[in-house]
Image (cartoon, rainbow, N blue to C red; front, top):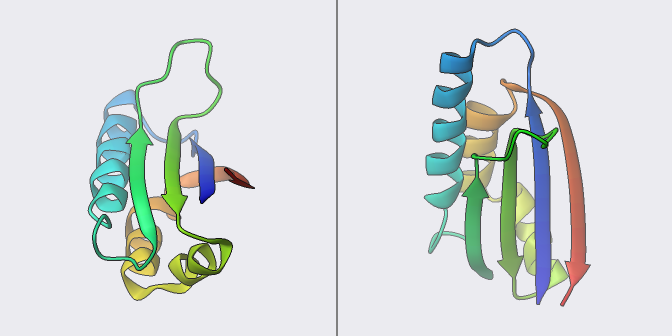
Length: 100
């Protein structure tokens, strides 16, 4: 199994209300991919970090293999969510993929 963890920071230009709306959209969009992507075992998005956090959103997902994770990256359903709900609103992205 391969874990795929992403942390994003939202762009500074958004108000707290806008950020809450954006985070909700990211969460619903990414979690809606469950059952649609081959090899995707689990997908969870965390949007409520503690005040000590320096990231706004975390994706915690698991795949059957590294090969299937690579397929997720280019899958049309994932690309659509990323292009519409994530990329336009984020300024930084950090990723950690590892085998379990």
